[in-house]
Structures are given as structure tokens and as C-alpha cells.
Length: 242
Ligand SMILES: Cc1cc2nc3c(=O)[nH]c(=O)nc-3n(C[C@H](O)[C@H](O)[C@H](O)COP(=O)(O)O)c2cc1C
Image (cartoon, rainbow, N blue to C red; front, side, top):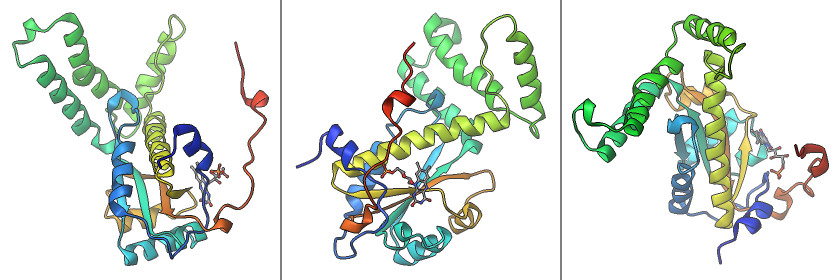
């Protein structure tokens, strides 16, 4: 029987050793990746890619680039979550096309106020936020907004480094959605950032602008794969009510 959310939440652990005798089904892993694409993303830009490594040889190479951590070395399959900030124009265009299909193709003057706002979001606001030139444009926007910010609340995440954070946040939400989906199936995972991102990018033939968000190893745990009880900072220390 599949696990409930509560059960999956407590079942999911960062597993460091998988059982070689217990294979996992690639189709189920792929389904969990598809579920991950339903994670929310900033402006619904979905600046992510999921590279599902099922070949034994590629997994071995990848484990080496994860410094041969046992979570990687014993994994049956691995997922590399890649941030593709460089695809922003393509993703904005896809969103725009989606909206036009929903609203129906018609002359610009016939769009309602709400429809115009949604279209302008991807036609104007997104290009304004994401467009940059050697990082200079981003800083120009940042300082203009900073001054405007003295007079009214304003969005400030417009430099290239801010947009990187924006894109990685969304990718990490997809990563967690994937891991919880796997837990529902009784499959185990370990998120890893102890990796050589440069070599992994080369392995996947990724362009220089692509960034590795994290690598997630997959399999079915050995009992010793969970290294100990779970530690969390006392809730009172991290929970602030205002
Ligand atoms: C972004 C990220 C990177 C991580 N990198 C590694 C890693 O390289 N190797 C590893 O063994 N665990 C890694 N972990 C797993 C954490 O150590 C683990 O999630 C944490 O200790 C809490 O344990 P739990 O996931 O079992 O609750 C990473 C976790 C996250 C979220």
C-alpha cells in the first residue's frame, strides 16, 4: 500500500547505502520525476531539467564525480536536477503561448484587463527582470529599484546572482517533491551537493550557463543506509509567530 503524506515525510531519510539485491523500477522513478514537475516555480518559469541516469556506466562515472560517497556508489539510478536560467526566453514564450491558447487568439484590443496583465507579465515584466548584459544591467536595475524602494515596497531580486537564487529555489522544491514521491512508493533517495559540478556538466554535455542544483541517488535502503535517528533543531527555536 502507498504511504500517506505523513508516512512518506517520516519515511524519507537521506539514505547512504542501498541494497543491490532490491532493484527499483525505472518507470516508477520516471513517474516521480514527472510528479516533481508539478512543484511550484517562480513565475511558473520551470527553469529546470531532470536528467535521469539509468545506465550502469554513466552511474559509475557520476558516482566518481560525487566523490564516491556510498550514497552514490551503491545507487541504482541517479537524478541530476539542472537549473537552466539560460532558457528564460524559451520558457517565457511557452507560458505566453499557453495563455494565448487559453484566452483565444484575438486582436490585442479585445483582451480583458486581466488577460492583458497576464500577457504583459511574460511579454514585458519577465524580459525586464531576466535580461542582463554582463551583469551590468542587473546592477543598474538593482540600484534604480533600491532608490525607488525608499518610497514604496519594490521587488529587489533583479541582479544575475539574485535570479540564480530564484531559479535554484524552484529547482529545490521540485527536488523535494521528487523525494517525497519516491518515499510514497517505498523508494529511497539521498540529495547530494558534495559533487564536482564542472565534471557533471561535461558528462551531460550541458552548456556553461546550466547549473547543477543537486544530484539525487535512488534505490532501496539497507538497514545501515540510515545512519542514525533524525536530528532536528527544536521546533520552538525555528518557529516564530508574529
Ligand atoms: C542540498 C542538500 C545537499 C546535501 N548533500 C549531501 C551530500 O553530499 N552527501 C550526503 O550524504 N548527504 C547530503 N545531504 C543530506 C543531508 O545531510 C540530510 O538531508 C540531513 O542530514 C537530514 O537528514 P534526513 O534527510 O535523513 O532527514 C544533502 C541534503 C541537501 C538538502
